[in-house]
Image 1 (tube, helix red, strand yellow):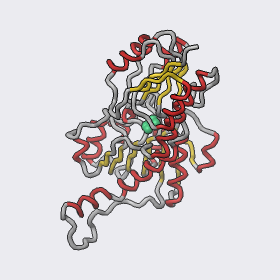
Image 2: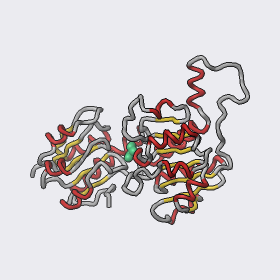
Image 3: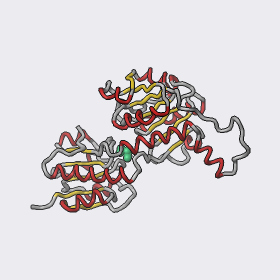
Image 4: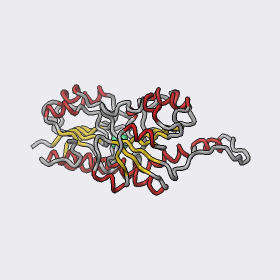
Length: 321
Ligand code: DGY
């Protein structure tokens, strides 16, 4: 019997590759840079499994090109908005992701970004490097404390909960959350459900931990920023498309909100001459929430196991329902 044919759209850690190489006929795009979609189209015909990244556009054309042999698409990410889920459903192709294994890394990064932003740490580091650190001044580079503040979290999934748990020890007074519905485990992290408007009006820090969907696309726009506190800090480690970036620029420059920290942007990469990049009250990271070796190795392993499960007629761990 011929081996399960798998195409991998990037160089991935050996934790995943070794698992697949042992059981499947594997071909890969052997580079760290994103594969152009024309290249994907050249390699997918007749494959049984596709292991892709969040930067690949797995649209109807790719799925059609792969043909009826395609049984499973796994992405080495939590987000799966780059895969045409509807087309997969129509054709009976299983779609899987890598949940759980990057929860801690993304939650840790989100907290780091919040502290960087609230305490103006990048400005501090820059002042030392550029020789602008002069004698101590009482009102220089003052930021805001988290103690006693209210934190609002949009999306109380695994990462949202991880963020809530980590922010609590900073002496936060309340954690509010908004999601598509109330969740049973919110009490475990001391989070209270509110409607979206109440959350953004009452929070000193608003943290976006949700995915991108029709419901969340540009949910933070000029109307939202008007309702937020002038002292509010916005943190986004979910998806860039949840925030309307031109409106964010206006809100940050007009003083409608105090500061923002973004680990995700729209587009990615954000051009280095984008107006937001030049602002001192906006810290932008290059989508590095899950960039730890622990997470990456586990993500590659889970993605490979998703494929092997389908090959063996089992339900993949990361099945997208
Ligand atoms: C994910 O997994 O979706 C992250 O955004 C990238 O690691």
